[in-house]
Length: 309
Image (cartoon, rainbow, N blue to C red; front, side, top):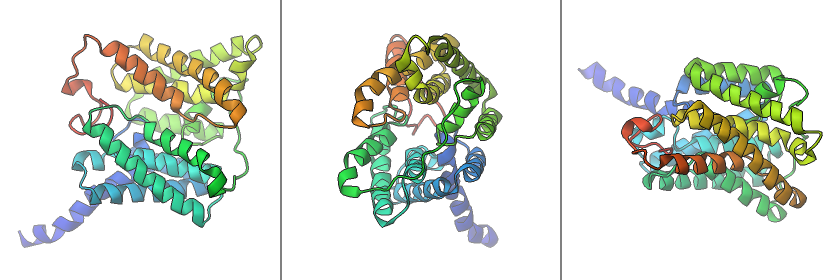
């Protein structure tokens, strides 16, 4: 009994630390510390600075959630920290590290955790809304922050089917096709069916881009955003137990929103990140929720504290 009591603090710490890597998996709707660790390893291979800032942001979010005494299971599953981890990855991928970026990243991490907790309290699906919010705020604050851009990352080639796998990795700013394929494989280890359906929707999106690009230049110009947001929309709707047809519709709707936002925000130099994915999924969840009771089993992951009802 004495030995068990002495080990209790270490067991508590080990359980809490699961959230550090689960934050990375939750970006793809997966509540697993192991999958998160594999995704972090892929990110290290692709872009070490982005991996380090992502890990720092994840640790900061975990600490804030602990101090705020947010629900334990949701905290350990990464539901309060995945937006912070994605924000850290974006900071590392887009801007050079310096004191200003570190301080501002800390502010953004705090904002994402607070926003995620508030959305959870009101039983609203957060998706990557907090991430999009703090990135938009960062862009608006750029004249005062003076964040220095890094060298542009490689984009996905729309000329081959490999574009679909590349888009999977681009969710976390991983551009090389091989690492995008590896990212997809890691996701499939957790939920092969949902991941395959999301990939199928990505193939449909890619075929649409290939067939319409010559006649619709605006579509071709937003191909990268369409690939990322389309895949996420299909994957997210699958996690919400929507039928395959609805997942493909979600991917198509996200693509159309990309074109619209690209036309509106492009001239201003503002990226939309994963906003189309959020708008598409929120819209289709609202439409399909009519007549469908919101039960415990309809919720993904940890129903009691999930940010995504």
